[in-house]
Image (cartoon, helix red, strand yellow):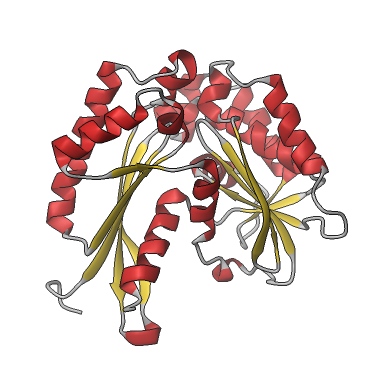
Length: 302
């Protein structure tokens, strides 16, 4: 495929801990078409620091966010994608001024930032095709996605979501001590009420933190599986290290080094409550789901 004829798609994920731009490129023709990531950019703007403490996004963070979208706008000009979709999750949807800032971003950059619900966020994660992860379509799985402000849980049976729920339990929120005990209890009850007879055999974990925990695990398997015990072993190692040592010795990004421990605890807690021993870590996120939806509408040639 010539550079001039290349079909590209772009996804922007505005999370509670960082903002990401991912570019996907479509290859092939007709039914054999497929898409691969071509480029990815991440800017560590932690909107959750403001929102989960004060309920709104500060002027300073809003200005940084607009500048980030300006930068993404320049990159979009270079890549010239056929379609672009930008979504915002927990922090923006809880911010009292979230809609106002989304409007400012559109006026300043021309990019429409869509603030999505927790259920929609979980749905985007299902837009990914996990057939390459060796999943048995006849099995039942518990899908766990932990972000800065929320955790999305979805029970999947035979490839279809049976039930899904979003909980205000996230890494940045945990660091700030803003997770309510009532929310933890609500998540526990949701897990306990999963339909009997179709209990999940495996968890599927998404998010940058579980991907990094997988990389740090000594006993993670080649088929992208990690046990609950291995997650605990990684957490035990991280908890005795200083923040600086996590950055220097483990090469963690500064805005990853502090949230990785609360993230690991959430994954581990969910797995324990659901009595699941192993998790598959496909290393995909909301941005990948956005790309897959765009591919279904544009890149597939429909």
